[in-house]
Image (cartoon, rainbow, N blue to C red):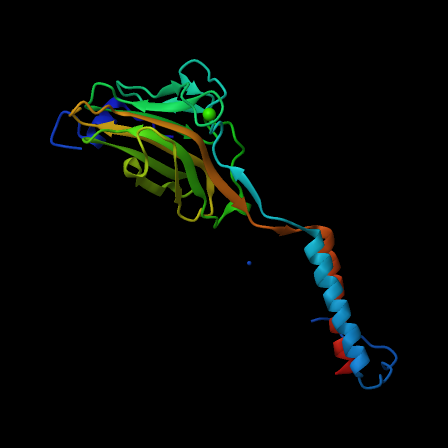
Length: 263
Ligand SMILES: [Ca+2]
């Protein structure tokens, strides 16, 4: 991953400068001449097809959802230098921290630049920091939803933002970048959700930054945003089980053989 320095964040937010996929021939006895297919035969074939379809459905593995990031509730404590397990803070003068003002459980994430002219940012690489398994081919094409609960005020001169990237053989691709100050309330928790871009082939890890950036504090407005129960809902497509797939293929081959004999 790219390590960012405070100078990088200052450049980004412009603090201190201008503003923010024939066979062999078989010989043998002639095949018997079968009588014409009757309506009863057709019904029988339909029943076979229906039974095969039912077997396939019963044997398939349903779509599964998982959280793409670790410790989205900020409940597990982190090692030294971490906000909470899996979460790091960007190297600004206003590090992100944990708060006991939680939406659920005992803790939430606090993003605050109490003196203005700064940014407070939490970040996680799902594999490198979060300790989650690398993503594989089954997730390619999914458009995950990022959701979290938030409350607080980034002040009139600031904003709260979220940025999601896909890391892997294609490089680091921007998947989602949104501001959410206007979607939250200073005194009550609001649910915020955004859908991200489709996950491309080669993606192995997810990288999230969530934070607030602010200029001068005006009108006595604070810069403090709380975030809890953060979830990136990854949905893995249903995959047929090998046994039902083999059953379906065997059944289809049988139906095709019957069709060939009647032709
Ligand atoms: Ca929590």
